[in-house]
Image (cartoon, rainbow, N blue to C red; front, side):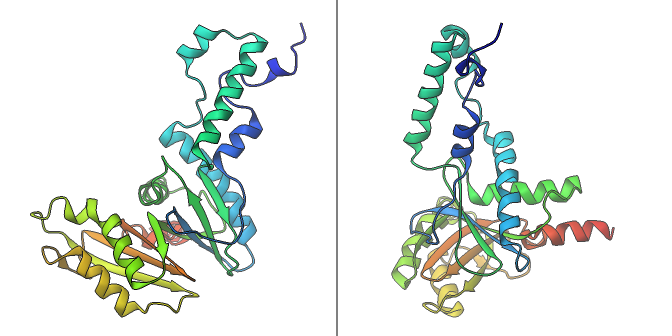
Length: 263
């Protein structure tokens, strides 16, 4: 018997178009304050190819880590049944859930800068742990999963570029890493990256962020436990706290692959 069009849709989740929207869509060239994301560098003239390969790779990894591609669970599906009407109902419900999140998991933003791309993310994606997982997979699997991507720089949260903006942003992002257990001293370093940015200089950024970390922790530029990444792009500042930065070749996927080839 020939099934109707609606019945041919995937019964236990979303249609292909709805799933794609759940993961990513293109956007303008503005990074707004108050978002998280990932800065990506690539070889010149390969921005489009880099964006395309990462959209696919990010989606596959998000499926594996967060299990976001499940739609209605099996128990609910069994209770409802699988006829055409309920299949349509499930898809409408799933689409409503997507709308309620207000944005897809990954939104590639054209920042109008050669060799640089930005992917805005939303929960459950945590940019720092997500990038760490990507680099860890590349390091231990010894498999090259990207062709055009170079460095990944996670941004837990962004703010407008100003001294006050940086201070408030640092307080929010650094709190779970440095302030909840101040009796346990942590060795840390600060690494600012400035692109098309002239509002704050490196010395000011390092001084302000170090003040927020506080005196109970110690600066150690070579043997730090945690690295504070400060990404400054145009009028936006972003911060994240990462580990294994040097082990994973400063989160440069191409450098990871090349280092493995020489062993």
